[in-house]
Image (cartoon, rainbow, N blue to C red; front, side, top):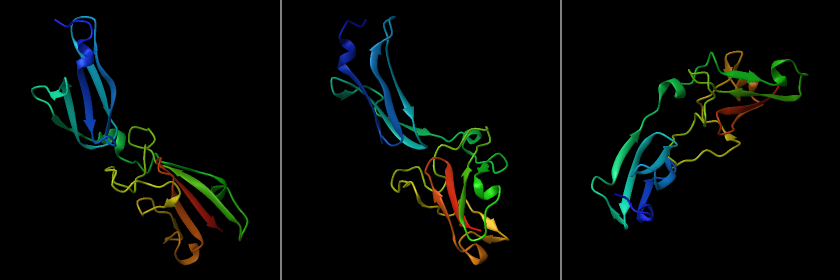
Length: 167
């Protein structure tokens, strides 16, 4: 049976922290159990460790693979949105722009850059040039080439992209 203060002898940790985070440390649940929790933040392997007095308990550490739920992570071009002044008209020779918002099969917004791996090794930098996952074409030419040479697609690292062009 647990005694008051026993919970403080236990600890929960996860690694790497860019993939998961501890949301609650072990605490009594009122019926004689200790309960703790952690939340995954990105796909990949996470090592979960439970320790008693600084020593791993039997079965700890445990490696868990966080999978991508395709319903929430598959980008659906038909549901994705574009909005901004460049789509409603502009003046020849003037810089204008619009925003592309990626939407998943579930109808939810895509939570991160689509151009970067979620491994934390090469993090997305807001305002950096898109790496090619999102492409925009004008008269069958990609932005930045041919008649669409004065254009850019910038990654906002949150599932949206800022497109800037001169029409």
